[in-house]
Length: 384
Ligand code: ADP
Ligand code: MG
Image 1: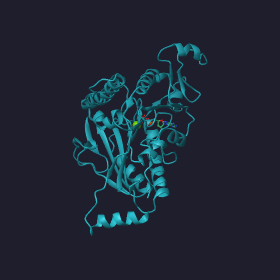
Image 2: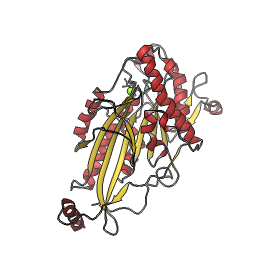
Image 3: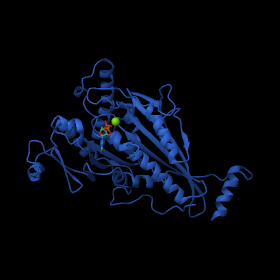
Image 4: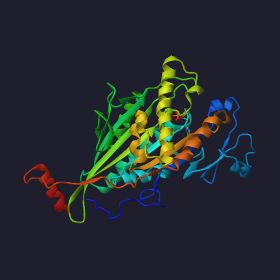
């Protein structure tokens, strides 16, 4: 069994943990698509030194100094990934530490934000040959668990849900819409299936099944774009002993979120069903921007209740959580407006301060002698 370390947080450059926690913000540029090349688009984004992002339309590509002076043309983030960056590098830079903290009983969330076609699903899910953050995080999680415990002490539960048209649905066992409820762990979707997972392969199958259940509707902007927000939740629970040999139960929760396209509803030619969808997706993303604004401005009231998405993200945005935002952008000048919009929100999200992220732990009560719990406790104590 692991021993509890003395510090409450993973302290790294005062960013993760400590008392001054903030959302880490990364930008990922995707390669120019074939279709974009065919219509003769130019690249309007330049990433320099793995941090600085320059929007270069109407300017000389190398005239960075001029761009620096133009508001909305120069941004800097925790890291910015050029189009050649591998899935693995994106995972290790953005999410590996969050996974490590989850294994210490802390909450973590990673979400991808950006317009349709900007690379959110590629980053989160990826392909069979190039798996994304969700898959690499689960792999890493199981590897670390295997390295740490050979006694089956860690229990991993998984759920996968979607917010579509302001309705919450279980992607692992589709059925009636789920109702959101507040309990002592925060906002939860009542009746959401929690699958106990034992291996990466099994999780992959669950993910594939879940994705087939994801609502996808063709739009003019991108035929295969998903108009839904998908949230994968992984809960890791295990027991440790503290210095005085009390057995402590620790629970870390990891949320990995693939948001719907952030483009304004007006940008796509939407009618009937789709215009309703657009309005609702806007409601969720609009609510997200209102929450970001309220958090940045240090407002007392944060309007989480305005949408299902923001209720579900409440923990990640204003709670005790290591939160990472990956903003996805296209290089094409045809997406200039959307890219500028995405970079604006990513820039704003950098200002959000979250609460110190401490481990979720509870001392186990001493069970009655003779019960299974008492036997387990005895075993745990013998091990030391
Ligand atoms: P979104 O989920 O934001 O709508 P996708 O992830 O579906 O966008 O990406 C749109 C297209 O671009 C897909 O065909 C995807 O495979 C491709 N793509 C996105 N990002 C990358 C990348 N970093 N490298 C290679 N192809 C990418
Ligand atoms: Mg997508």
